[in-house]
Amino acid sequence: MQIQKGSQVVLNFALSLMDDQVIDSTFDKKPATLIVGDGNLPEGFEGLLMGLEAGAKDTFLIPPENAFAQPNPNNIQTMKRSEFAADMELEVGMVVSFADANQAELPGVIKTLEDNLVQVDFNHPLAGKELKFQVEILEVNEAP
Image 1 (tube, rainbow, N blue to C red):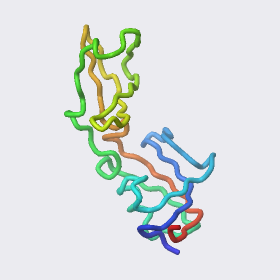
Image 2 (tube, one colour):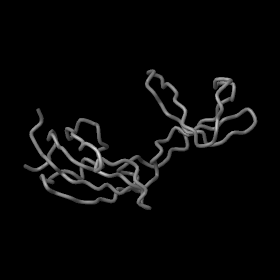
Image 3 (tube, helix red, strand yellow):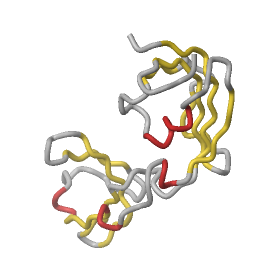
């Protein structure tokens, strides 16, 4: 059976940067199970799986446009230090959790600290990165 929209797929995957730094992998853990088209994988990743069958192994190079997009300068915000808890020790590179308009969790990375201002980057940490996506398809079934 070939993977198509709505297929339930059991797979091992590894996501890495072009320098082979692994971002996430299931090869040394429990395989992942997903329904193609349910939104758990970006469309650019799902499209690569279409037509593959159980037993298939492949490595794909994914440009930023098909992964986590290019960084958007509008997603970098400057905030007052007083908007953070007084006892919070901020450091460049630190990930801080914020709430968006719908009260959903929104992570931001501290880019700069200057006097009483803090620059926070709300772009996805992998935005602008070309990625390697290694897959091993273990099972392909009709969606339950």
